[in-house]
Amino acid sequence: MSLPIPVCAACGEAAFPELFVCPSCAGTTWRYEPVEHGMLEGSTVNARDGVHVGLVRVPLGPLVVARVEGAAQAGDEVALDADGLVPVARPI
Ligand SMILES: [Zn+2]
Image (cartoon, rainbow, N blue to C red; front, side):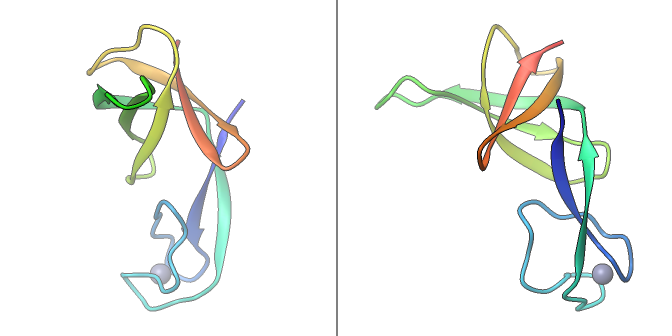
């Protein structure tokens, strides 16, 4: 289980999601590095559909908006995976 994080092929800056142009060097080529975990910095439950959504800081730097499954809380390390194009965070 992992989530692919875009990393600029020219300068190594990570971004999520992939950007049209790298904010550091204006490069336009991205490679992907699999990330297996991150830290849940905060989360909320969408009042409309009950989906638990959180912000996960990954070791490469970016914040990832992810669907949170299970009882993860802010400050917890979480495992990262992808459900199609949707990042998913689960308690470790
Ligand atoms: Zn770059």
